[in-house]
Length: 150
Image 1 (spheres, rainbow, N blue to C red):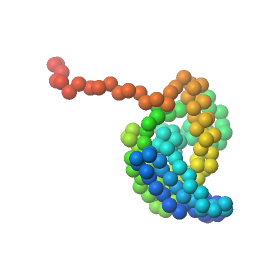
Image 2: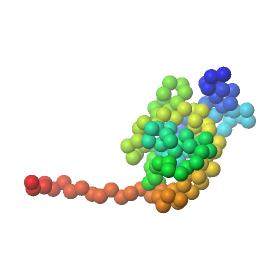
Image 3: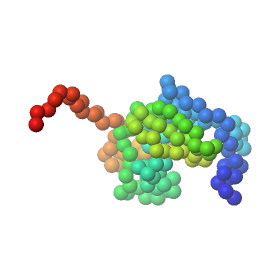
Image 4: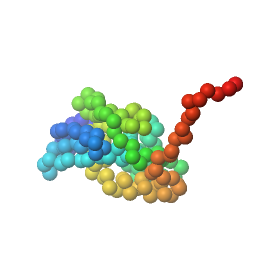
């Protein structure tokens, strides 16, 4: 059974909404229990982006593997979703205000994230704490526009 057929038997995405003012992506699914709305904040989706930058972290977390030595994306508090673009009929490409644009989120992946959102959020925060990292964004130093003598 292909993954598309499996997804269709588990949950069908019905509607997608991006509320930029709230920074929330909402996906309505129809599954065996009826209609279900899953909401995601920008920070959560940025941290769990299935991109190359996050790939090892996401694969390890979702498979339940050991997290020692795995790169964790930190400093993403306040990151918001700037736009979304459909990728065929199976996924969304999200663009974030931190410049990240390479994550393609399949509807099956979003459904899995939505069903485990609170546990995944707790795991992420615990991992940051264990590594001495923070959710806070680093302040960027202001660059001067004044000319430099050489």
